[in-house]
Length: 245
Length: 144
Image 1 (tube, rainbow over the protein chains, first blue to last red):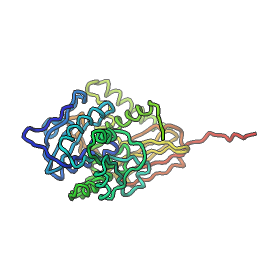
Image 2 (image 1 turned 30 degrees about the vertical axis):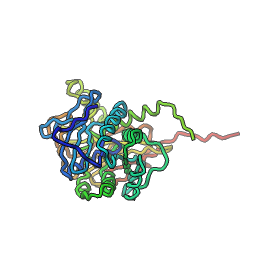
Image 3 (image 1 turned 60 degrees about the vertical axis):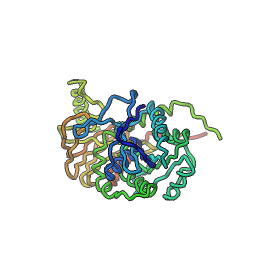
Image 4 (image 1 turned 180 degrees about the horizontal axis):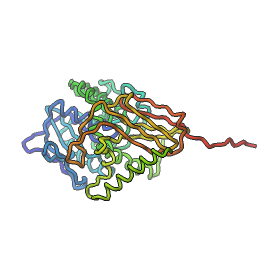
């Protein structure tokens, strides 16, 4: 995995936001919004021979699907490519190894928590997973309940596992959301927590106003992400489950 | 299943086959099924779940009002049509043209037979949920 940054940029950041396509595209929508609102600068990209052959074209400029943005003490990672099962471990092994050298205060992963009765939920709740006592304290100060027991699977489980293995402080925020419908309302609640953790004040009004438009414009990415989610589910069902106490 | 619904489904399948046969390199099998450019229609994202006695179908219908949704259900086919509050413009991933869309439309074959008369629908924050009672053919078995 190659992590390429602009030579003229000396990246120093204490907070890393990660928004990869996953449940409800909650992380993608949230981190895209932060990049736009803070007018973050593109610093580089992540590439690998095992990524599918794909580029994004924005206003006639060719861009890699997995990009790094930054401003002040915040770095944001965004992807137009969902991580299929075979990509998750190598991606996060390289990514977390690179981030570790930056000595961050925390990596903040944002994703959705699939909720069957999501239609009845007017204000999605946000819960958190942390890998160190310091990040547990951050969540506590932000008033976020920690996930106490359970099994966490999928793309962001790869991030949590690698951060735990490499002893890198990380916080993963999970907002109640639809599994396979883009859910900007869940992204909004997750960003309310990000504002508290980072002690910033990103205005979320525009996200609320543009929610319907965002749901339409992210349909194709949601469909592609649903395939990645189903692939992961199929592979997990094929393995024997071992449970012990 | 009504004759009109069968005809609609067959027409839709025929169109898709024609598109794929025309030029295989042009067909993006995944994304082409998200819209119909000729009719200016988007195909809504869909979720289907089953419980013991219900089939629950959800459609994602952003930019739509409740009064502009039209639902039709037979024993095994559910059809939704919904007009958007205003048309939207999108450039699909595998197309280089900006396309305009005005409505959503989809017909799905249900996994089991249902009793269409006992169905309920709710629409909230752009998501339509339809709950359909499964047709029961079970007879009680008496223990001796």
